[in-house]
Image (tube, rainbow, N blue to C red; front, side, top):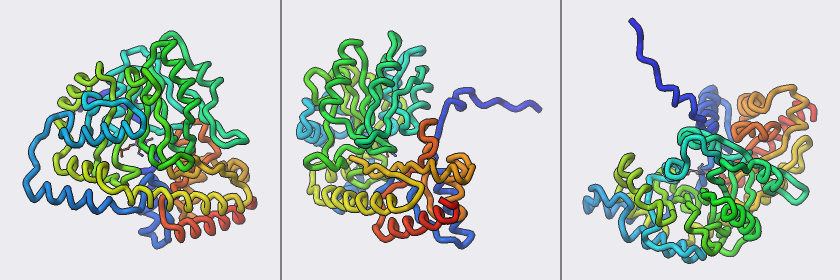
Length: 399
Ligand code: PMP
């Protein structure tokens, strides 16, 4: 009997390597070996207690029916206040609440890209970006975030070279996963000039804003704060990272008014709304005390300094301190060369033989060859243990 064939569309999907590494790490643990988990982009801090309390209260009051697709008005207002604190002139009509940042990324592509349009995305970069561009019928073009003597920087030559008359949108991610590069206001002004000259959309993934180490309150600048740019910028943001609420699956978009109805229609076609008690928890997180966010950021700063210093004592690797987010994207090309393995096989060997779980740089695009990403959003003792194990690996590989 012949069987039905899955749609070709599925072949367009890339996945996040971190999920596969986590599954492989569990298998290694089951075989009795200790593993230091540095694969996931997930802070080890608990959710803010006032968020948890608000969600429980809402559930107990049976606040468990559909809400307006754009989100409850109180949460949308709170996002407006948050945006204004960042200098973004948002109003309620710019804000859409979504079930985490990821669907908002999809909606941003679906709402702006027509088949054949070109979208510029960073390489290295979040692995989901190429999939969602292709899913929307667009063509992927890349610009580089490259390691220079002064740390990670956007390589403007690659961005200029990637632009064409068919370019429809530039996707920015600042602070950037996996490198921690954080756009300055001057970088964003340059992007804004390009977008205005060429009439482009900017899709700005700001999930790590609030975790930028060189800015007051940790808040990195946004392209949408540049006068006129909110009309062409879609901010993708959410509660996963700085509020340490990854499993709540709550996010939001700050979108041009012209796209608002389309975005809401996309929400109606997908999830109808984010769960109401989850939105109540998010409301408490964004509008309540921010001590937990400050504590997380300060702890991440210390962990970054400690981890990067430790890494740089080990032969065969080089790590520039990230300006934001919580990943060390480490150049291990010298060490990898001694093993004659590909980057992916090398990262698997680090896990299987030394018990350190990180993501191969190639999960973030071909320019990640020779790099491994380690999340430092975990306890200092675990980071110290990872340094010990990596030093052992380096010795064993003969670096
Ligand atoms: N963008 C980037 C760059 C990310 O690293 C992540 C999470 N790893 C997301 C978006 C998705 O965030 P959320 O958990 O809100 O879906």
